[in-house]
Figure 1 (cartoon, rainbow, N blue to C red):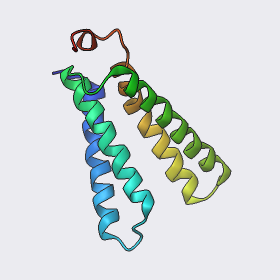
Figure 2 (cartoon, one colour; figure 1 turned 135 degrees about the vertical axis):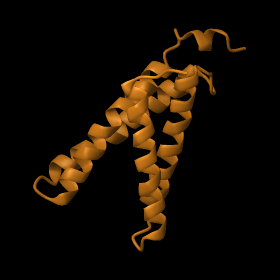
Figure 3 (cartoon, one colour; figure 1 turned 90 degrees about the horizontal axis):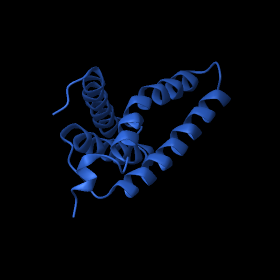
Length: 122
């Protein structure tokens, strides 16, 4: 198991994301975006688990595609935040994009086909 500031950051990120999703379930503002956030959080948690324990989950090409999709999604979120400059949504979107960058880095490293655990997969 890897131990580094990045791993500690990921634990804190997932804990806060889980609390945010659970709060959204109990709040009146429940919408489809809450389900999308839950799906993205669960997907990133699976990647983080595989990265942390160096275990292959699915295959590297699938995770690389997921990485590209999430980069596009968070890029779109960042662009939407820039369009709403000066409002609370600007800060919310900006914080969301910035806090996800280390998680996306873990996904990028995990999806590298040169990782040892992908070579051992049957």
